Length: 57
Image (cartoon, rainbow, N blue to C red; front, side):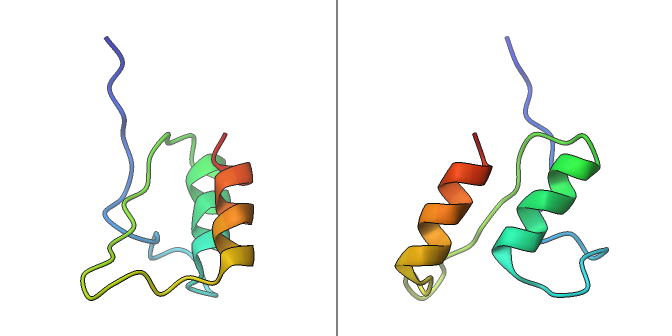
């Protein structure tokens, strides 16, 4: 069984609070998960979503 550990949202250590920067910071911190909230709908450009998917693998 694998346990996934990561922050609830973009880590506070990220200066530019973007999803891509957050994923890179989570990787740098040797964590393997990051919550992304879409409370009022998905507000992410297609290009960012594709890049986030590529980086998260």
